[in-house]
Amino acid sequence: MSAKDLTIDLVIRYGFQVFGAIVILGVGVLLAQWIGNMTQRWLDRQRLEPPIRTLIVRVVRIVVLLFVIVLALDKFGVQVAPLVAGIGVAGLGIGIALQVVLGNLIAGLSIIFTKPFRVGEYIELLHVHGEVTSIELFSTTLIHLDRSRVVIPNRKIVGEILHNFGTVRQLHLSVGVAYGSDLNEALAIVRGIVNENRRLLKDPPPVVGITVLADSAITIAVEPWVSVIDYLAAQAELYQAIVEQFRTRNIEIPLPQREVRLLTRS
Image (cartoon, rainbow, N blue to C red; front, side, top):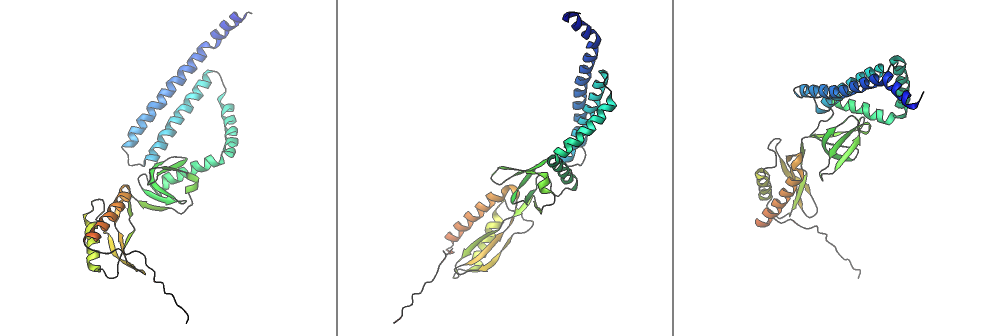
């Protein structure tokens, strides 16, 4: 039999099967996409966290695609039962080889369902901190105050001490005034600046008061609350306003001083 005749024989014998399998795969991909979109729209109306919605949509699409692949293989006459058993054995080996990846996956599911933090909150752990922008199955992404991204593997998060600031943070500012200054006036100036700043929150109320009697200055603590996004801008505005108002009202901010005495022996 010539090559031409062999090709024609294969096309006649398996052509419709190949064509049918391709059609099934194409329709299956479109069906998985459509069902995923329908599931996404339905979940958007539910009160679920974004990572949970993403997980459910992905699982639905994967299940539909797996079902379609089984149908396509059956079209070729492949015995599905031995194939599934083989996939199970291979999956066990792959699972052992990918322990780190699976660890991240399990940790991601734990974070998604236990909700120690949510998207939009400001957290600190593992000596890094930032606003949570996304919680994926394998990693969590933070945006630092300098707008850089910090990507943390989920297995590094679970089991660690986590500081969750929520959506607001408290500023911890301080300014020193000379011992000869009018403390009541200095405190009134600082409180007025805090009350006038639009970035600062009224609830919880800001804390302003004397905290330290240092060697050369009386330290006034300024600790208002602010939204995470305004943290740096509010800090800069408060310091600038305090310096300007103190200069205008003749409130001295002293420099560090040391008194040195020289003793001579007669």
